[in-house]
Length: 335
Image (cartoon, rainbow, N blue to C red; front, side):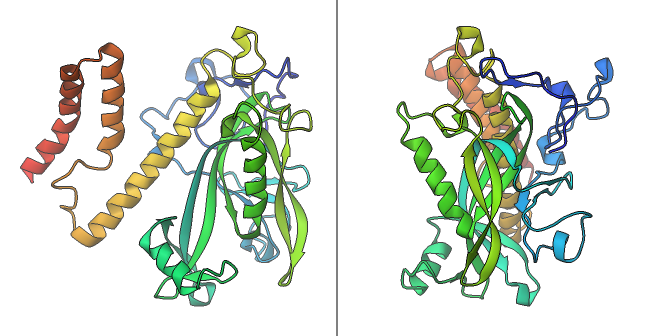
């Protein structure tokens, strides 16, 4: 990914995060300039809902960036950032730290019918179960909805982009894993899961690169997951004690978890908008009446957390929840 000033050499495996004023909220690497008190100017009031979520895609021969020459210099096997339009050599790869995984089945209109994203379904949804039953449990057969749309099993990896040494967070992006890439991702997950001490998924610093694979349909580029530091999964883990406690890893404040929280917030907002669109399409503009609006959920969660920190008494918690629900009630009564 594009970078500004080169990060200092790693010292004891310490992982640091640049000051928020020096990074945008979306997949832009470290700032090249210090804007001082003007840093972030013009972005007042900007939330994750106002920004695009970048995706990292592995380019194939039939990708529009390559086939239609939509991006200058694009070729098969490169990793493409959909927001910055940056290209990364597939052999060089991208250093990542996976903060959150989402496993879904994505519904697409077939290319023969114009193509396009339709929606996504939970793994245990009725739509997915019906499609699996229609294939008789044969995992080699394509899953389809009754109207002929394709259901593609997908892992969305909400990831922090690291510098080459794995010592600094430079942005974030979503890496979608589908089709033949899934078995390599599951192998990586299994390797981390089997490590003594049960480290969390986000403790493993890794490099995602591409390589040329082939099957009965022809040649294509696949992905591989490699340890970023030390050549072994055990040596690439972040030390949970933190640098300020004598460990090799997260400094004070656990910035990786803070960045992880921002990713989760962006994902909650995206899901909230999807739920609202689906409900309005079926029930109309009064779809939120009779229940708290979906966007109130993070407010309720924050209220509950702040109440619990002050006291464990029930009345205090209920008072905060009542205050959080009050705007929803006013909206319902006014309608």
